[in-house]
Amino acid sequence: MTSRLRVFQQMASVTTLALVLTGCGSEEVRIALVPVTGTVTLNGKPMADATIRFIPDASNAYSTPGVDATGPEGNYKIRFKSRSGLSPGKYKVMVTPALTSPTAKVPDAFKDDPYMAQLSVGGSPDQAKDKSAGEQSEFEAEVTSSGGVFDFDVKKTAAAKAGS
Image (cartoon, rainbow, N blue to C red):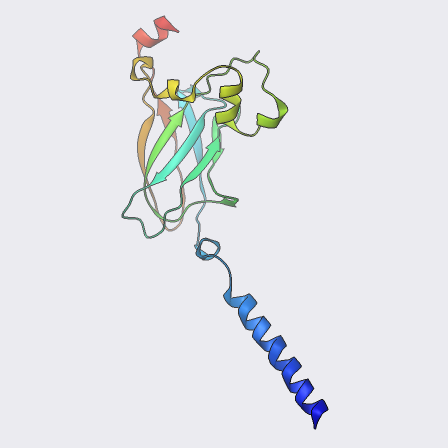
């Protein structure tokens, strides 16, 4: 009888463990994300190495802020934490131009972190928010349940071009 009881206890333990493991996990892992991609340009030309952020509206069902850095052709693919995509909803989109010069030496430890890379070469990421720079860097986007391609053209005024 003790062997049957022991087998029963072991099976109960295995079943309980299986239930716990399948029921565990953070809610964000279960949030359905949809692909969000596009291109960022500056007066119609590809804007390389810019940081693009999607900031969720408070009315969205889920808060999934996303970020990426644009490639050489201005392309991006938004990621929420380590996952690709965002949850559907309204977003404020912020584009921060790269302020590092091509000749600046960024430490290897910061190559994948645009914010720290900028700080390491003596610039301030907040400079991109300076309205005197003449660049439009805020947009709005509504991500649908099928995702989408969002292209943004940052405008730089003639006065800002002269000061560059």
